Image (cartoon, one colour):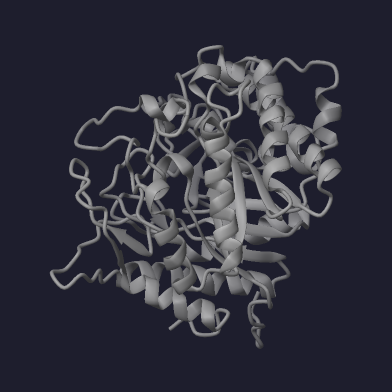
Length: 466
C-alpha cells in the first residue's frame, strides 16, 4: 500500500536492543550458577565456546552506562534459568537474583525499560539429563521457575517474553545446541510441552501481577512462492503454517493450526495431549507478540524424488519432501553469511501477522551479522550495518502506517557476543568487544559508527534515519 503521508513512529516507541544470557554474560560457573546445555559446548572449527563471551557479568555496570549513552528506551535480555535455580528445580541461588535485580535497577535508573526473556536456548543440564522438554516434569519446573522470577522482578519489569524462538528449537535443535538431536515426533512432543508450560506461565503472571505484559518470541518470516503456480503458492502456505503460524496460533488461539495438525496426522507426528493441556493453552492469552525477523524464504512445490541432506539453520532450509523445497530468490541480496537481505520482508511479515492476530508486536531481534574491523584509532566503520538497519526501520515505519500495532524495535544485538553457531567473528553489536575466538584480551568496549547513528535515530524517535 502506498501512503502519501507517512506518519511518524509513535510516542513512547521502544527503541531497544537485545542479547541473551549464555551468549553475552560469561561467568558460566561463578556465584552458584549451575550448568545449562550450552555449557557443554566446546570450541570447534576455530569457534569459541560460551564460557567467557563478552563477560557482561563482570562488565554489567559499564555496559548499562553505554546503553544510557546510546539512549536506549528498552533493553531485551534473558535470565539464565541456571543462575536462578542451578539444577532447574530446588534451591534458589540468591547471587543470581542479586545480579539480575542489580541489572534491572540500573536500567530503570537511567530510563531504560527492561524486557525479560525467561528462556533463551539454555535449559538446565540437570533437567536435560532427565529428558529435557520430552519430560512433562519440565512443564512444572518452568512454571516454578516463572513464579520465582515473577516474584523477584515483576514489580519492576513490565514486559516479559516466555520462550525465545521455540520454532527454531523444534526445527533446528542440533544446530542451536539446545540438546540432543531428537526425532521429528519427539521434537513436536517437546514443542507441545513448551506450549503448555508457556501458557501456564502467562496465566500465572496475569494472576499475580496483572499490570505486566507477556508473550512468546518465535522467529517469524514471510514465505514467498517461487512463482504464481498454484502448487508453489500452496507450498509457501503450508511451510508458513508449520514454520510460523503453528506457534502464534497455539498461544493466541489456544489451539493447533489445522494445516499443521493434518501434517502431523499424515506423518504420525501428533503429540500426546494429556487432560487439561488444551485448557491450559487456551488460558494463556498473550498481551503482545515478540517477533525475531532476519530474512524471508522462497519456496516451490517439491519434486517427487526430493532428498534432504541437511537440516540447515534458522534462515536456511532445504525443504520437506511432499511439502516444499527452498529456492534462491534472484530479487534479494545476501549477507556475508549467506542469509537473504529483505527489508521489505519485515513489512510483509508484520502485516501478515497483524492481519491474523491484531495484537501489539515487538520486534525482538533483527540485525546484520558481519566481520567488523577495529582500526588503529579505535574505530569500527560499519556503514553496512547502518544501511541494513535503516532500510528495515523504514519498512517498519510503513508497516505502522499499514495499521500494524508495532510498539518497539530491539535489534540484535546491543553488544558483540558469541553467535549461536558462528562464534565471535560474526558480530552484530552497536558496541565492539575487543577479543578474538581464542584470545579474550581485555574485552575492551568500543562504540561503532552504528552506535552514533542509532543514538541519533533514538533521539529523533526515528525521524532522522539518515
